[in-house]
Length: 168
Ligand SMILES: [Zn+2]
Image (cartoon, rainbow, N blue to C red; front, side, top):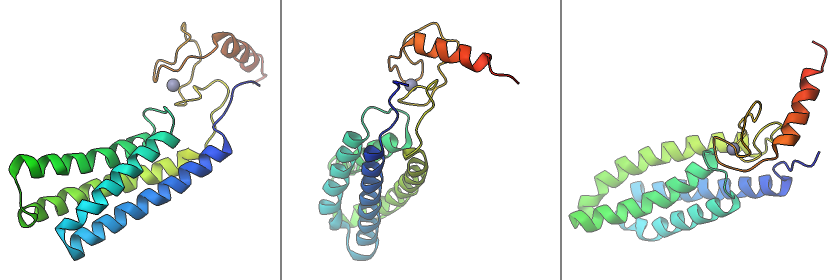
């Protein structure tokens, strides 16, 4: 079979990055809640940087929880910076909205991390899109309808024959 599944090295790299991301989130949240609001000046960029790394190790697997996590890590610091500039919040004024939104975002990030952790090492079957797992059976196209990744329809057609010829 020539279809290349998610490599083990990449899975390990994902998991390392997911752990780093969790540490950054927990530290950022603890510092914000128990230390002071201005801690986001250092934890924000750290979170953004983690988002870039997650997006890089993740390749182009759109719709995957790790991809959404990368987007969350990139979005939140930018969003907070925008709010502070827009409303010219002092650290005191920013504190409550930051804690509420930060806690919500952290719940989302943790859910995505858990989901991504489980899917991370799962390799897709040959008849599935190797990028997103979409079942590529009975399609008149050479691109995945879910994520757009090109595939070889002949390989899938051959597999389909094999699957159909199996005794029930
Ligand atoms: Zn796909």
